[in-house]
Length: 176
Length: 111
Image (tube, rainbow over all chains, first blue to last red; front, side, top):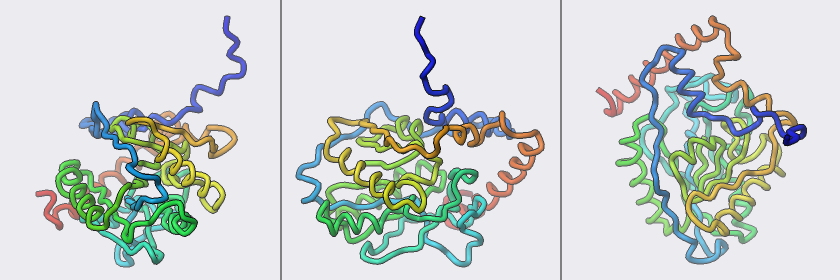
């Protein structure tokens, strides 16, 4: 018999968010479960040149702070009013006040006091200064408005167009 | 390249390259107020960028959120909620959905 003495506890594995969310909303009385994006194939293209010769763009699901949209944290409850509905872009050479109160992050175990955990722009600037890559002149904000059609047909093509304008070679998506 | 914390959701969709941090959602870039873990995370993401051999490459960061994994049992876990909490959450969700619907209507995304 195998000695399972030193195995980690069963629960100490990546959370099954899809299953947990499905069961959660069913218990809340919603019997129309969300269908997550799912593809059999995933695209892949090797970097055509070393990263240090490439232009890298940051794409975020964080929102710019909007003073007229209620509590946006740190520690704010879920705030749907702070959502945004069109792609926005920002100058990467300066700092931006981004928040995640419009997203279902883990509010029990994190309070959103340090934007570097969801919006690593300052660190990317530092890495770019160290010569690891060239930072694209703009970053882009991707709306999270629960319409997969809008994401696929409107927002993603818009972000791609802006990346092409900025001659981006590679993208780092940091979703929350 | 995706830097994220919801492993099943990202892998279900399928992406070229994925750095997974086994952290509570909201911490894709490292632990709060720890520049060292944030730097480690971005550095590892760049390494994955350069070295991934094909699509759906996932690398899991070796960083731990806490010594034990008990926090993973909390997220939307009905087994840890009283019936009263479930009822409160339902009321709250109904409110939030109304706000989101009005917003979508205002920008012409819903009728």
